[in-house]
Length: 316
Image (spheres, rainbow, N blue to C red):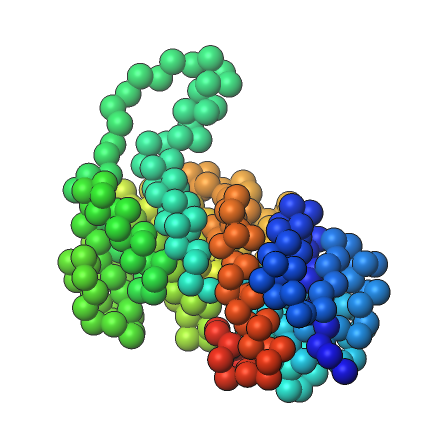
């Protein structure tokens, strides 16, 4: 039986329409079923491939696809797939390598907003309060980036454009063009002590669980800021709250959390000098256009029986 590809996109009808259009154009030989709702997706029970954002795939859908052979995550992370009970032998691929521009822009937005105390300015605007004060600059500040992949290099490019010095922390690379210095991970507190901005971009895995915790926050300058656009588990959130409330660091910007969506009762919502964004770092207004070429090429190789050519294969 020929392979049937199910594209499930419940968040955006526009993105789903783009996938339908480009698959029909670039892969006309494929049998495609597109679904905006779970009920629509459940009609494709004979699908052998599921293409969707990993965090939006319900267990019910996986259970309803007995012939499933391949799951293509439309995001870089695949953590959400682990509890779904995927059958043995199902190939899993992620979508990676194109998130740099939006991640780098979010990092710069958070640095600028924290440095210039933008939330306070917005509150002053609501209160019609004129608070004319000096504005701190990014120029001559130091950004320490933990994790040195492609996204980190793009963040570093933007930092240097603002006249900043960039330092890296990595267990995989010892020299990176444009980085003033690279520390090994076991010297993270030493690197953190140099930071005006400590930016987490390291993948989440057992070795990086709570990598940035009380020891790192204690090493940072009281004027320094922490930014996490990696994964929630990379930072010890309780230690961060303690560091913020105790004045160990000046502030923080978080786009990722150990529990998502962040529960309304979570103390992070009420922590001062903290900017929260709802895990939007990898998103963009052209996301479907960014990810589609990679997914279509993987689909082409899947249909042709060439799994070895499929990119960003992962093991759960």
